[in-house]
Image (cartoon, one colour):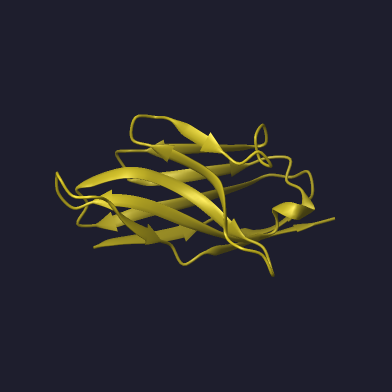
Length: 121
C-alpha cells in the first residue's frame, strides 16, 4: 500500500505563488508517475501536470508557463510550483501516484486527500 500526504495549500492573491508537496510512503516498489489534478466547485476533476519515471512532463494548457512540476525520486515526493496564479486556479488539488508493486503487473492509482487552494482578487 502507498500513502500520500499533501501539503502547501492555502490562500494566495492573484498573481502570487504557492508550492504544493506530496510525499509517498509505505511499501514502495516502482512509482511510474506522479502528478497533480484539481477540482473546482461544480466541475470535474482535471489534470494539472504529471511527470513520469523517464522524466517526461505533461501540463494542462491552462497552466503552461505558470506552473512547474518536479519530482524528487530519493524522497518519493512530487512538487507543484504555482506562479502567477489566477482566480480560476482555485480548487482542491489532489496528488496522484501510479505505483507498481512488482515487475510485470500494471500500476495501481493512489490519491491524496486533497489540499485546498484559494486564489483571491
